Length: 433
Image (cartoon, rainbow, N blue to C red; front, side, top):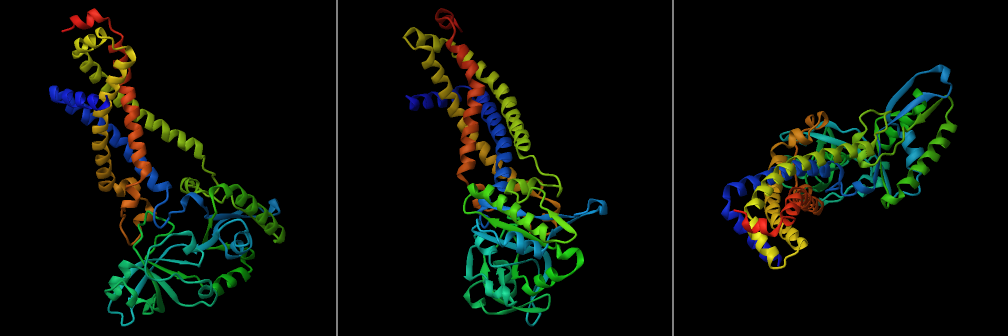
């Protein structure tokens, strides 16, 4: 039956090529606008390599430091200090892994003879980093806890950096020496290049932070050693553990504050989820995620309703030309439900055709406008341009939403014309010309 509806839809397209082109293009543009928003949302909030675990990762970007005596006044905002990380986060029992990383910085990497060089984005981190993120190792392996504690000068580099310095990106590079800001490091691993859109995992060289530097900062007297340059990442075993982890963090912070003499820290409702962290524009302003999602949904509804009303007019015009055919069907016993299903099914075939075209348009639009849609001041300062991978774009969720919006658009644009067409008087329909 539905195959017959599909054939009738194709025949209808052939009979009215002008209306068909307008309908398909209108559907395609509507789906394109909606899917651009969906794709950007997916890239910003859902997991892809190496940040596959976004759905069960929590983030702490900074802390507020205040005096216990409110009369002393003043408040400082800082990235997480090593002492705070050590006592409040690395003591957590619930998470699968905890890591901290220094702010990403630019550095110069050269060969030992300094004939080949490359300006790189660098991250200093620890062994937990490699448990949280799923990197594709082309050769070698990540550094270990013993490397961090022993201040071993070992580095993991990207494929692009390996090719620039050594001309190769395979096992032959492992164990070779490079100069990072004129300091020798041994290459311990090579990973596939990472897109800057994986904001927390992205770099071109990853090296261990020096544990001795962390200990030195912890022992400094300034603000009781609370100021630092780290960000903390917490990998939960499942997103269901988030509340348990946050409760444990609150307990650790309360215990930590009791141990301080004059100051106290406030995490400002952190740790954050992926979406909360992205929406936290100001350190002390907790993002209202439900409100933001509501605004996002409202925009999608508007983008659906406006083209649906226009397409509904075209569908009604097309139905008017087929009133005689529908009258014959009713005369031979077709009920209202059958006629409505027929009209919706025929219109769905056209909508799906426009939807496929719209999805292709959306991919082209995201690719051509990626710097505008996905860029930021931070990303603009990096040494690598924005890149899109198949894992970001070809996702089951994207195809599901494309099909869902096609169904909704079909229902909104064809339901009223289908109802009106099926509700007409048989005699009037048969006499319609």
